[in-house]
Image 1 (cartoon, helix red, strand yellow):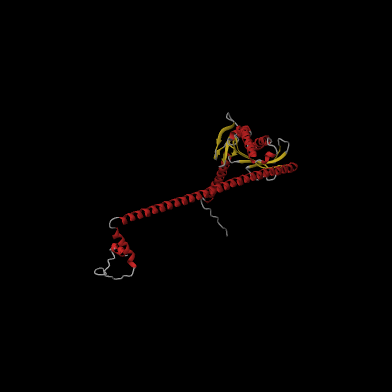
Image 2: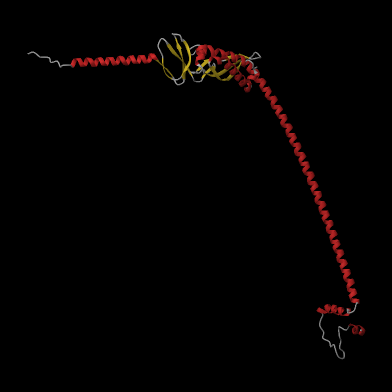
Length: 346
């Protein structure tokens, strides 16, 4: 028994076309990715770039600075050189080498001071690129500016400016900062034409040779003792001056108190004198008034009608006397107010 094979019309041709389209799509995708990668170059957000042309009348580094983004580049004809915009650093340090990609490290600087002493100095320098065109045209591409420009120029300038300090002046912070600033200004002027800006030069640490370190420490101790003795002498002088002023003030206070007591005594004596004078004047006036009253009374008694006054006085004297009723008329009658009769009868 034989089996017959049935072929559906058009089924084999459709699969071939689908496979062909898939292959074409893959080729186009791969080719597009290749072209995208080959004909474009990306500049990061913290970078800028300059274009270098290899062929043609405009070959060489172009002065136009390209910012962040995607840029068209013709392979074999040109390329982009990128540089970081961020702040970068150079550290001269033996013990604390930085691992950051933005920091270049170098051994500490051995400086001979103006006295001939050896001082090991750790210094940090902060800088950044401001013109990549000047960097690549004066130094070269990539990080060549670090090893060929920043490092040797910084070492030279630091040795020059810090070497102007003597051994003891390294102890004075304001002098170290002053020399650091002078080194920054000199280094900035030296590399400004290369498109690099120097932000800061900071002396972080310094170490003397052990033999000089001990001698300087002893000298500093002696200096501190001199300052201490001088300060104590000034303090004693000021204490004596204070005591003198206090003594003078106390003497002035006692003088014023004594003068006040004298014034009080004088015022009291004057008051007592015034009181006595016033009392004497009063007594004199009273005596004069009494004498004048006596005189006037005598004159009154010697004038007409004085008998009546005497009678009145007698009546006043007899106010508290025992009253005896006697006849005042007829035989044996007595008139107590008739003084003449009574006097003649006595």
